[in-house]
Amino acid sequence: QVQLQQWGAGLLKPSETLSLTCAVYGGSFSGYYWSWIRQPPGKGLEWIGEINHSGSTNYNPSLKSRVTISVDTSKNQFSLKLSSVTAADTAVYYCARLQPAVISGRYMDVWGKGTTVTVSS
Amino acid sequence: SSELTQDPAVSVALGQTVRITCQGDSLRSYYASWYQQKPGQAPVLVIYGKNNRPSGIPDRFSGSSSGNTASLTITGAQAEDEADYYCNSRDSSGNHLRVFGGGTKLTVL
Image (tube, rainbow over all chains, first blue to last red; front, top):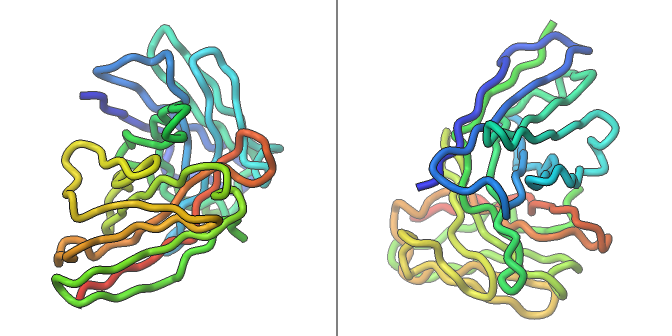
């Protein structure tokens, strides 16, 4: 049973860099894409970006200039960095596994529990 | 703004059937996946592909697609189905980008 465990700083000041890590337990790391999604308080889900085990990335254009997603295959971990945060970046951040299925289309079948990140001065 | 459009709220009487829809140009080419989210919890995948349910998802959940619209149908809605539902698919740019619908709040009366 694959599980994702995520962690990172929960309180940031404006202009700081958000940094979160997600560890994959109980399953293969290669062969999948690994995603970050966020949800501002009371709002819907927003896709941030994804990475595969080789380091190939795709980013949400609205965040691309500030986002870096990286992977550490030796630890089965992937990470999110979001620079120059503002109050608008306050959200619950989730990591998820993206199945790269060709016929069924891609879907996120395993999710982390989420990390609440608050940006406040 | 989202490239996938969902009705903000839908209600259904207990035991009745409800359809939640998701509209977007990309759905003409790509399947949507559907996620259920209850308050304070992470989303859970309920439907993917043409009409596939992950293990553990009740068979009252089903999916379909026609043209630019994907649908999630709950046949015989239960109280525990009250939740937010999100669709997700590729965006319409032709790049490998993903987008969520704005979400539908389902109320079971």
